[in-house]
Amino acid sequence: MIPVSDPKRGMTALKEEIMSAVSRVVDSGWYILGGEVSAFEEQFAKYIGVKHAVSVASGTDALTLSLMALGIGPGDGVITVPNSAFPTAAAISRAGGRPLFVDVGKNSRTMNPELLEKFLKSDGIEKERVKGIIPVHLYGQPADMDAIKAIAEMARKDDLFIIEDCAQAHGALYKGKKVGTLGDIAAFSFYPTKNLPALGDAGIVVTGSDDLAEKVKALRNYGQSERYIHDDVGMNSRMDDIQAVVLGLRLKKLDTDNDRRREIAKMYTENIKGDFVLPQEMEYAHHVYHLYVMETEKREALIDYLKDVGVGFGIHYPRPIHLQDAYRALGHKRGDFPVSEKLSDTVISLPLFPELTDDEVFKVIDFLNRF
Ligand SMILES: Cc1ncc(COP(=O)(O)O)c(C=O)c1O
Image (tube, rainbow, N blue to C red):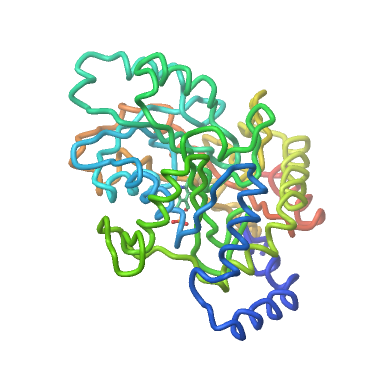
């Protein structure tokens, strides 16, 4: 069986270093928000090239706390895309807001700036109380940030905030700039299959704003501004020092891991033949291939075949967010966001992770070409 993803290979390769770092944590006596967490926050901020990195407990929390810090509350609308992981929208709801959707581009599979403009200029938009936008850098490919920012500015001057959802794009570049530096604030996930993986759940918020960083720091820790003094209700969303030492070790090899992901994607793109729509790297993007997502009209048959020959696969995602039962109350129907809907019927993700061998990659290619 060739797995679609295998976090164990990357972690076991570093097992000795990880165990010795964990032993350092055990001996330190600080297990949450200790010195190792501060050291990783500094290391990550430096890597991204941003003033502040505030660690939290997950990518979902990174988005939720960013929204809370920006003051999102009941009745506020936040625009995102229906073609994303569910937590992008769930974070908006958790913060008290309401997700509003704009469809994605057919080739980019990320927010379509033209549709964003159309939406922001539509009749009755005032009643949506739009406060901000969450573009998602999906599958490892940045969204078209310049176009999105220009439209946001044209519609409302500096009034609309932009939160980048970078959960799938650690180290990706947009016109040569790292994702995470392109909006007001950005959220990353360190879920174990991500490009930068932890040994459990973890996430981080990055921002250039002193004010937003201070707010997130307080909100992640029961809303405390100082010990036992609470300016806000907040929540408990803190990083463990064990996760911080693992992330510190993994961050050192993120760029080489991303290079390997790009190499595998290139092998797929150059060698897979047949009736598949393969992913495109947009001209503004340095794609880091968190996922290699192709499209096929024959997905059911391909799934049966891949199961038969022992090739793992993923479907990212089988149901667009606007059609999830959890969002029934928003009143959307099939046909509202046709590009996302089509993608949900046709996408399939191939095995891709840095430790995948050339031999495995060529086996996958060979199987696909014989399908
Ligand atoms: C695009 C996107 N946003 C947000 C999240 C949420 O991250 P986490 O699973 O760490 O809460 C994920 C991860 O699944 C994701 O892929």
